Image (cartoon, rainbow, N blue to C red; front, side, top):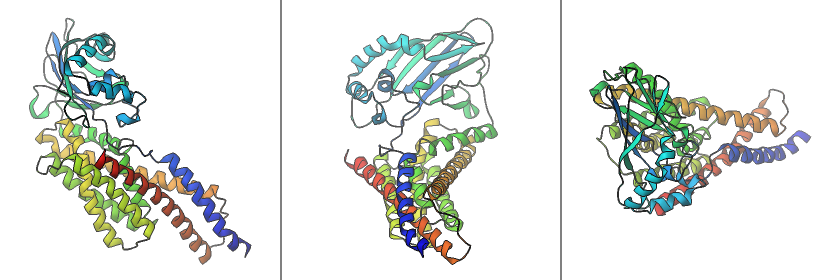
Length: 398
């Protein structure tokens, strides 16, 4: 009797602990628009290397730490970035010329272990245009190579964020890499173009897909948590995750191939709204697995359109598109499973901290377990819905 009377208090404690754990673990309610990776096209000849880099020049000049944020509003130098974003191309070019000596030290062109400092050849900076959108500039850098035939490696400091490297002139099988954390490209020969097969492309895109969920895909993480909070049983989770995977694979392929094109200004608010919907549905306690699975499939189509921008940034050739798509999706699935396992671990921690003692195996503990999970599900779904609602409003009106 005493245990029964204390049970509501324990559930309340569990709910409070869950709020603390999920607020600590979940991403903060900041915009989920991701900072795009810079894209570089590199040409290597026996005596010179030339590189064209498409990048957000404002974030570089503001010295944002692009390795630690996913959106410019998360940076302490956001105001400097905004001032530069409102700067004319002529003034921004002058800023770049002054800043170049420092930037050049953070760009790595390496031959046989020797660093070579590049020169700034040119910069193409668009007009200010729509201030609500990031401005993509293109700089050309070059460096003379020492005598010999030692290959060239290229990269830049982790501070500048992710970097796509594509070798020019290699046709369908030309080398392409996605670099992060200050990594360098594979050695690029001065004599012939580096190529790679479908297997190498497949393996390379697995971590890219994972990274697009953890840590970059804040909105996708919240959506997956919404699926997890629908039910603690394995079968509904598997149905939903499988439906979500199938759907986003379809639209990811169609959008990456250019068959379906929907502006991000439409897709991003709908993705945020899907987070709100699954959270609210969890709170209301719907248990129709078939209807929920069908709904998740529809939302998965939207999320696939969001994923497509990543593959589009790489400029994948047709010959390796299938390998890249499969590898990317496997990485996404690993990321989703990681989110689910972490959520489950947090729930177990919350249960333990709430002070639930082991009980005899009868119907009462089964019912208590269901009540406990329901409390955590509601708390988590409320948090998810509130964050999704804020993102929806922000992406539509701001």
